[in-house]
Image 1 (cartoon, rainbow, N blue to C red):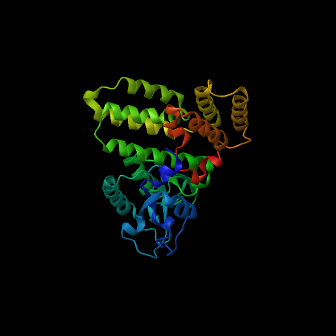
Image 2: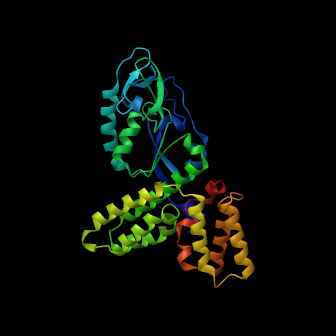
Image 3: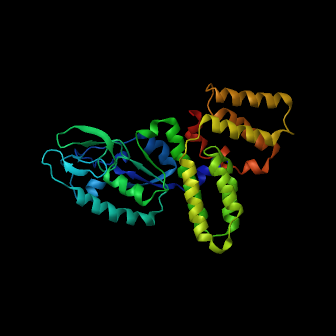
Length: 323
């Protein structure tokens, strides 16, 4: 389960705001192409573009929109003519998210600050024209309500190393989950999926790790459909929680325990020093992970060789070089 194997798999289908791909769909006929999204993630993601304004029937170029009124239920208004387009976009969004069910998306990347696609902190204006960053874009809100378990992120937040690694990790997990769910449901399939993701879950939440372990151990084959549904909800809920340095240190020490009979005193000391340097913020996570992967291969540790924690996404993305 190395990075070469991951890279050769089929691309992962991810929804995206169309302008981020360089499509000229913005109100002024421009775009906001994101090179990391297109050039780097594009090697692994197959994008499904969506532009709420154009698909709702508004042309290019067009008068820009903004959110106005109550942050919890703002109106989508044109800036100068103050035309209320809320119902047009909301009705389109309701139909569009239903259509997207058949696309089996494993994630969505939204355009930040957009009154239709912003995921958070979108400006909402008072009637007097005073803005507050308290809104959510109309389409983004409809999508997240309809697909609460699908990983979502914004283009701007993807430049934060921790948020970027978290989102991409969840997208790869969602892909593997969809593949598992597409096969004939069985207790064995679910247990195998959980077993290979145990340490990944642990680095996000000890409580979910324990709860999900008990859940899988007590599976009833009579109602596998509801078991799969419940498991997916717990899985994505766990992975949304931040994987902190302290949590990673706990998992790294746990992994090291598998080699207590194999490593020399010097090798064990070196590994403990690397974990300590990571805990203190002096080296990135990839350093202790790389040495542990070396020991997994050297000693042919069967359980760890199947753990996605040690290889959650392609190493070429260098996501753990910065966390």
